[in-house]
Length: 415
Ligand code: PLP
Image 1 (tube, protein in one colour):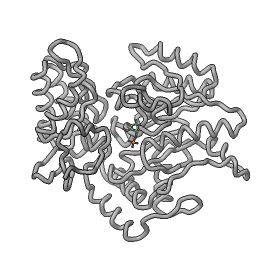
Image 2: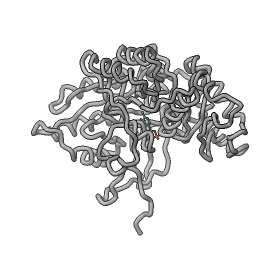
Image 3: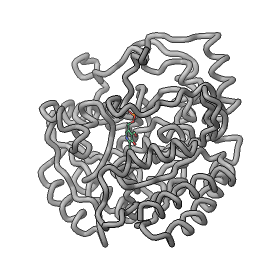
Image 4: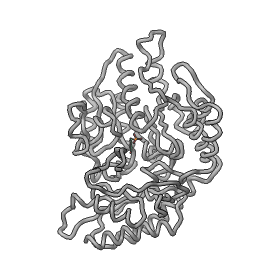
């Protein structure tokens, strides 16, 4: 019997094999048919320390035996309180409040709603959201609205709201800054960005200076600045937050993925005092209207507390720096191959674009590469013609060699 499971971003009509994973450890996935697969993309960018970090797994087991779930509207629990205090200690000081949700997309929805709620409660309603071209912020309606439009959201266009699109920075980025400056004059509510690197849009990087300058434009015009660090947070780009590299502090910060070390779904939106204060009143109509049943699930919060302890007690950023260096060496090797374009790296993220023999980019390249990498026991999931590597920080040299050898062979075969 065929499986009744309907998978995300999967075309079942193509009858591609769907590997059944039975267990995982560190950078390795083990399948039911006995294969050891290298998790080269940290299972969709989440498993920062590797699968089943013992400390996080232990915290999950312990919390599951104590308190599994509790309503969070008007009630609280120790893991959420400890996590919020811990986040306040390590995140920028001005981000004084922590709102919980369950995924990167919902952390973005929350940030957008907080931005509009802020302006509404100040009786200066502002509605327009500015976004950076090629961005990806998730697949819920608001998150899709502020992300790039394309084949993946065309059928749902009637559900999406209009946004102001600021061109992605090229060269000195002046065109971007000018467009932002012009758009900021019209009193938009907020500007949302993926700091330093646009992930699903193709691992497109831009320099910290431009992030700082975009922040400055927003500040000058009183436009709320939302940093979506769902992918970039937790060391991915070499620092705990990518914003740090630009000396930027956002008004709203979205975090998920590595928040629990990639073990359980959880997200937070951190907000400044003025945004919290705008909702603070004896008037119930001014509260922040958002929740979901599992908001701040205690087991997920306990996993995130354990993640903070791993960050406190282990040399995570040293591992990140070491991995960045080891990837750089291998990326330099790839860069010399025919058909490899735009090698780029930021912290633990490395990417190249592959070009076909005709010089044009093949639209069916990604599925062919996906199948090829799967047959080579690698979890690598190209974005169009962009092949990127974003492994867990614990990956060893032998596994990295396998990844880069497979990408190199693919590049040579298609060139
Ligand atoms: N924002 C960014 C920058 C992301 O990269 C992603 C996911 O890849 C999201 C938001 C959405 O997160 P989730 O898939 O957890 O909803």
